[in-house]
Image (tube, rainbow, N blue to C red; front, side, top):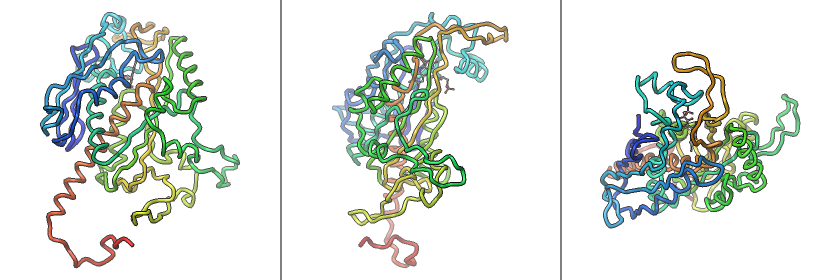
Length: 404
Ligand SMILES: Cc1cc2nc3c(=O)[nH]c(=O)nc-3n(C[C@H](O)[C@H](O)[C@H](O)COP(=O)(O)O)c2cc1C
């Protein structure tokens, strides 16, 4: 469906070539100082036409706030916002009247609904994500002001070109446990310090300058060959409180995975040490506890990625999302028409040769929405529990010991 969230509910609407796309955000706390300019910053990072590595479709993506705030303060009522579609060119897509684009959503939408938008991917287009990014910017503003939460995503790979993340294994002997730590110290430092200003220094949004240049060449090569290429986006969430996530089905990482895999073109999700963590034994992978300066428990390492048992533990959450090469390519591809007639499709139109530079703010937005929703749920549980008289009769093993 087009609505996400339990207490912070985001509904997006709109197709690639209709009058406007947008969102209705229900459950935003009242009293949040918010302006269209706060939202626009992230919209500008997502908009098409922002560099020669993205689609040339030229949309300003100006957010028009319709409801839910007055004098720059949220009212606690639904926030409605629209973003006009101004640069549609439906005629670009006339070949796709005959051909479903291979690996796009034309066939499945038509098969499912029995009718589809006449051009441009309709609801499956990344145009829909404009509403998500606007909603995410609102969530993020609350999270920043109330908790100092920081959410920063960046491009970690394009094609076979990866930002350096780990040391190389010292041995190929599968019986020897000498795999290095899942992530190098350099990469962990990057997660701890990365900022959006640094990410935006290069049009690829990869913060590792040498790698970024190689990625740029790779994207240009795909574009020049009328082809496309995939990549990954890594995201870190800092200053998260503990206790977020609703076991068992709505664990923190399950909600994140759901949200991330709802972004168009996503093909994979991993959190913490992820798939790399499977190569080291438990003795190297466990995160031993240490006392923090404030007396609470922290972990020495953070291979868990800030989540254990589906609940945040106050360490940084970090995760990675895989994006496939975009389906619409203008080089001719042997395929079949809707009626099965074999043929060849060279898709016209304006397309992203690689989606990851533009996917960065979308990943940040979905992470903000997930955190916001789980935070409101945990806060309402804690507020309800705090109204009860204290219990002093429980055995010591059932409660947290006092801090020393
Ligand atoms: C930021 C962004 C831009 C995208 N641009 C394009 C594009 O120009 N051409 C294309 O075919 N797909 C593009 N996509 C992906 C399609 O929307 C997506 O592949 C399609 O809807 C099919 O859905 P699926 O890949 O999730 O199965 C883009 C995705 C994102 C996140």
